[in-house]
Length: 177
Image 1 (cartoon, rainbow, N blue to C red):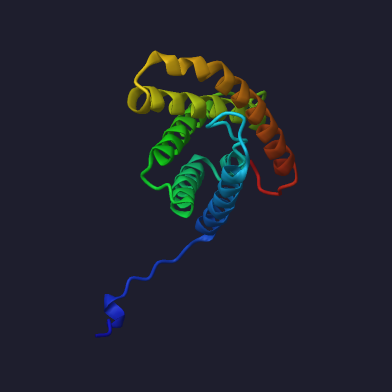
Image 2 (tube, one colour):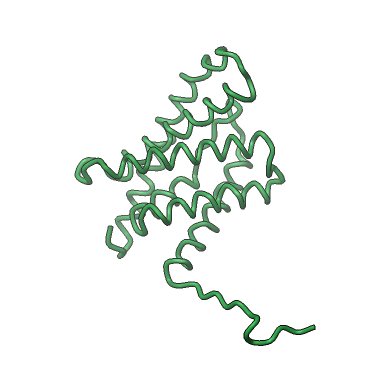
């Protein structure tokens, strides 16, 4: 049975949709690369996909960041075979907390709060979201907080490096911020 022309739904992607799709694909590739890197402690990764998040935020706006982040979490979960596992939900919690942090960061004055500051806020919120979910669901004990200093130090280090990389890449873009 063939559908008639009136039964078909035609979706057209505009230029922003295509940019979001490209950035999401790049973020997924970087998330897969992150997953392949060895880690000194479980859960400490460089967060390379956050570079793409910062680029999306500073070139396309917050709506694009939300889409890129959601597509990255879902796509990486599917490709890594971790969809609906605790690791997937930890990633989702970190991404959601990071988005909330970036939403509040938009309220800060643009002068003095660029990609590095945004990256540090996002990294701190990401770790906080993951620790909160782990505490409430996976390890219902305050002992998980013993890991907080190591995770916070990692968030500062990776947040700074990712923010510097994003700032450098944004310098070379012709898209107005």
